[in-house]
Length: 65
Picture (cartoon, rainbow, N blue to C red):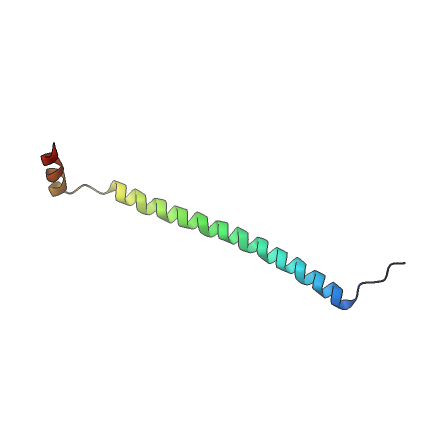
């Protein structure tokens, strides 16, 4: 017959399992944060692309030709 696990060993095993679960949750939460950051950056970039070029800058660029 196998000896039963001591309460201390059972507690340590539960702690390791809990730590692994929290590590997985942190990793998936990090992916969500990365996705949010990427979305925010794309939004800011698109706003910059959609802005009109000021006339005085276009005049300066025209003088380079």
